Length: 130
Image (cartoon, rainbow, N blue to C red; front, side, top):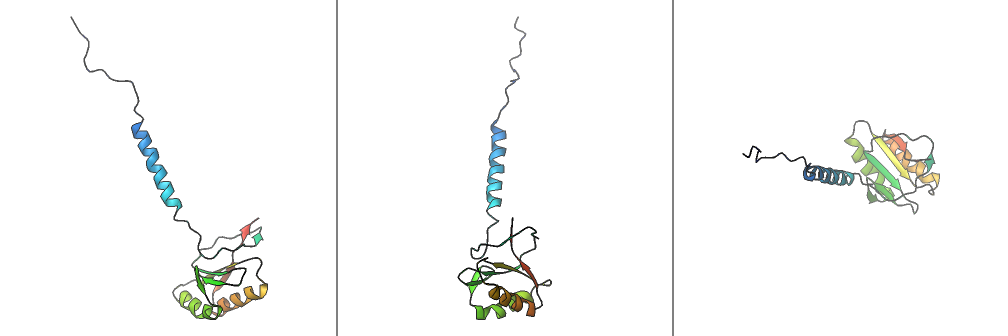
């Protein structure tokens, strides 16, 4: 007499669902890491021991060869004030982050900072941590 059951429970663990989850997580992290892209022109920022993080709504970049960029778009220095005024008009806090190359003379930093100051904006200088 055969009393054994024909439906046996397998003790094996299937890893296929685990690998699906791992691949989905990998795709998710790869896609979200691409959303953090640097904007503006490449500059070599000065180093500082204290670095505050502020929300960057309006960025002004000054490169080593004295090219000016406003939120990643190159502008002439003469067009900087009207375009900066137009951008600051829509914000309530008016924060301007200056990304100035460390090789740029201080005179140009002061010119850009005075333009932002005349527009009643708060000025922050971007630096790299030491």
